[in-house]
Every structure is written in C-alpha cells, then in structure tokens.
Length: 201
Image (cartoon, rainbow, N blue to C red; front, side):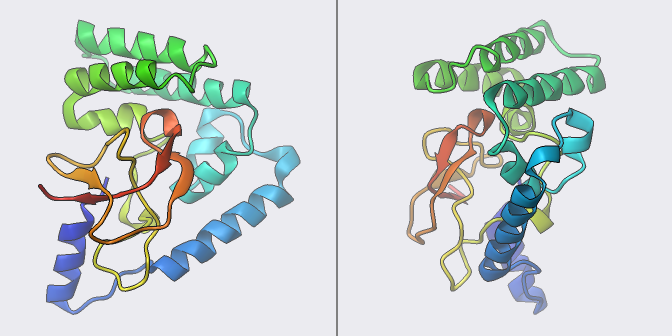
C-alpha cells in the first residue's frame, strides 16, 4: 500500500501534482462500474484474467460476481501466493490453509473469525499480510490510489478501522480529514467498510 502522507509531501516539495485526484478517481470508478455493467455476462472469473485489471476495475468486477466466484478468486490468490513463495514457514502455510478454507465457507460476515485470521496473518507475514489477505491480485500501485489526506477535496476512504492494513506503523483512522466511505472494499478479503485513511503514528 502506498504511504499517502509521504507521497503527498514528496510531491509538494518537488512541485508536482498528484496524477490521480479524487475527482479523477471518482470518474475512474464510474468508468469501471459502467464497464462492468456493459460486460456483466463476460466478467473475468479466472484469477489470471482478473489480475490483469487495475485495482479499481478488480474491485468493481469483484462486487458483481457471485459468492462462489469470489471465493474461487481468493482461493486462487492464496494458491498463487503460495506458488510464488516456495520457502514459507509452517505458520505461513497454516495461515494460507486457514484463510483458503474460510473464504470458501461463506462465513465472511463472521467478524470475530475474520479478525482472528487477520491477526494470524499479520503475525505470520508481518507487513506482507496486506498482499496476502487484503489485496486480491497484484499489489496496489500509486496509480490505483483512492485518496490522499492532504488533498483539498474529500478523498475516498482507503482503509478500514476494523481491519487495518496500512503500511508499517501507519494506522487507519477517521479524521482529522474526513473521507467518503466505500462499502466492502477494504481489509480482510475486501469484506470491510472503507472508513478511514492511513496516517503515520
């Protein structure tokens, strides 16, 4: 995940502007949603095709898929991660086994179970947990950013205060800058309300 505080400060000091403003991002999200509706009968359901889209499009696609297709994407994601990391510890393999079983169980509304799995993922993977259980597909890049605490316009929320996957020591908080909440696009298995922004502690 991009540390938006550092990115914004770097851009201010270099005199550059952010490539994607909040208004631009809303337009991109609208374009993604329109594309999904226009292609509703042929949305990518296999992980390789799905992963070829930007994060904004992946989220729009994901939310229009049925539960079995969503679960299969997460299972494929966990399998892909395992295949690309052959030297996982026993603890990491257990977490991957547990989250794979969980996403297929249709229990994504069980907050206590999600929080327990999230804690296990964070303990086993550290900062990389965000790539494992909170980003479906390739890692997020700056072009996918959904908001910036230093923008004058109200940004879209990019994290969940209930399932926090901000970088390093950063913490997901509401305010002092408010943001526009986004349903079920943040946190563990994209199943939490995005209601905050990442701030340095």
